Amino acid sequence: MSSITIINHPLIAHKLTLMRREETSTAKFRSLLKEISLLLAYEVTRDLPLKSEEIQTPLRVMQAPVLAPEKKMVVISIMRAGQGILDGMLELIPSARVGHIGLYRDPRTLIPIEYYLKVPHDVEERDMFIVDPMLATGNTAVAAIGRLKELNPTSIKFVCLLAAPEGLDHVQEEHPDIPIYTTAIDEGLDEHGYILPGLGDAGDRLFGTK
Image (tube, rainbow, N blue to C red; front, side):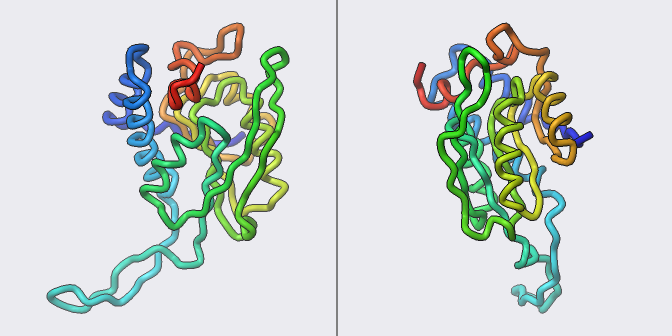
């Protein structure tokens, strides 16, 4: 089964509580998601390889660690809510390339339908982070991972803000090789496929739509 990493940090827990509040404004919600995404990026890049490079400090020459130049990354945003995590991750890893996959969930069947895909031309040379705030039924995540696997990236990690047990089970069943990173696992789903207690529709709250 794919590994699940729950990123426990007091700052994340506090900011997530603020995001959950119904009265939190769109601007504040957007800002909080970006701040949490910086901390998510810190965790999911923990295993990036380093090399030594000779540098001159104000006092002496030393061998200092730098990122291995051959390590390339791409962040794939599942449109549209994934943009909120994408913006934060790019603050920490500005050299990463960006891709987008558009999937919408049929309100009756909850089955995802692809309508857009745009990725860098050299995606097969890059480690891939697929980002989407909510892992609810898992249908969208499973479809996105399956589609992006066809492009043969070096590796794939799935990064979300909140997850439901049903969604985690679904992704693990369909893609047991994909590590999942999240800040919290909530109780479950309601009859419409929304995470409970959750924080509502992340896309609507991020962009101020209904």
